[in-house]
Image 1 (cartoon, protein in one colour):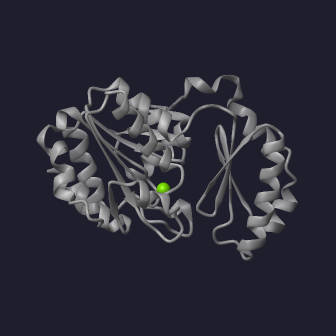
Image 2 (cartoon, rainbow, N blue to C red; image 1 turned 30 degrees about the vertical axis):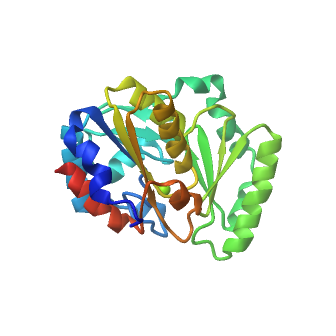
Length: 266
Ligand SMILES: [Mg+2]
């Protein structure tokens, strides 16, 4: 932990959960990072805590780069709100399907159209793994035989994608190609908090895209929508140093986040 006292930081949440929002990233935050993203799991203690948080708080949401339905399957709780695809999808509690972010419009298929034109044999040779995430296409090199070579191949594709008008986002051993639209985890968090009744909110995250979530909390406080915001950073060797620099409270791993969630659950 950083010098900030966790007990003091959580006090406004525990004092009035009905006016508080709890939002968390999934991979590297609620679920430990694993070599195969399809094997990511949320520990049982976290699931129990999140279920209690959903019952007590004004808003309980998971904000992920994954598809919203995949995030819900990994967490295993229907009663949470899920933001998927870095803000491009919203899956409400118990909803049968996600809805696209309205800001996307006809650009929703731009990344998929670009990926469909890539040469498949070249991708296989480089060891890059292509993930179709609806509006977003992800290029993974974690676990490739030659991770450096695969990363270089991803950078070449990213340059072509940028030239084609797509937006490139960098994560932990992954590059994402997205349609050009003002949508990110931060705009999604802003919309959720503005639409709910919370005056206190926290967001926990570990990676570069989570900095958008921290920035959203800054904006919500500046506009007076939030009285108190808590930015929780999950530090890691692969994540950007800005996570710890911008956080009000930093934990060293997803495991160290668990006691905070249990305390919030009451
Ligand atoms: Mg993450």
